[in-house]
Length: 321
Image 1 (cartoon, helix red, strand yellow):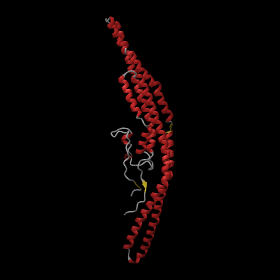
Image 2 (cartoon, rainbow, N blue to C red):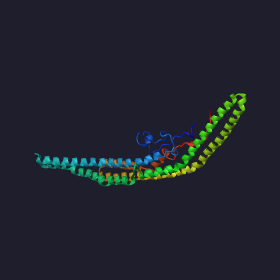
Image 3 (tube, one colour):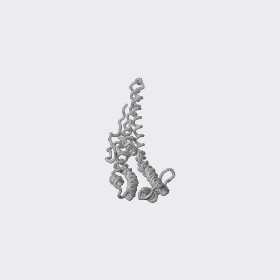
Image 4 (cartoon, rainbow, N blue to C red):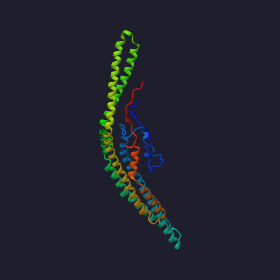
């Protein structure tokens, strides 16, 4: 027998999420992977995990930009070395006249190209990356085993579920008592029917007591289920309040990431000015950036992870042999 019942609902997918996604939240965020709805005991842990992951994602983004900055700097240094080496080679060569002048100028083109890449590297290293790392440090302050914000949310969720958990325990106890009374009554009835004639009265009295116990425990069980139904709106409201705070916390992360992408786009725009191929690359990037929608991402997450998931709620279940 199950304490809960649940209808089967397929959560809607977000139009912003590719149906072929294999990695990241899209690959496992469907609530069916967890088998529990958000309002079930302990299921809020997925919201805490998202808070924890925010720190790691910020670290990954900073690492990615740092790698790009190093690549740009390495390439800039290689271009300068290439330019200097061939200028020096040409100085010692037997070449002459206008051909030597143009050849030398060809080698010198490495210098301004190197400046473009070193400028991008410096902008990333001196502005964007430090800002991102400082934001992560300020936002995810550590407290023993957890980040302080995660610990705060966990305490709030536990507090919201405290009284609800007691109600569920009461249902479980009342249900067990009712089922036990039903089994006892069945045994008493069987004993009454098979008892010798001189003992039948004694067994009949026991069977009657057992049947009265069924009525008593059934009423207690039904009352417990009804109380849970009455308390459900209050419980949902308390859980939603905490959930919305986790949503707001995540929204700040998404918006900061969007600001970071925007700053990166501006750096690219400066570095790719007057280059039609690179300009198209940056235009495509800005077009992608224009689709960045934190509110849509949060709504999708809510559908798959949060308060819109299909939770199991306690219902009365009649005893069956």
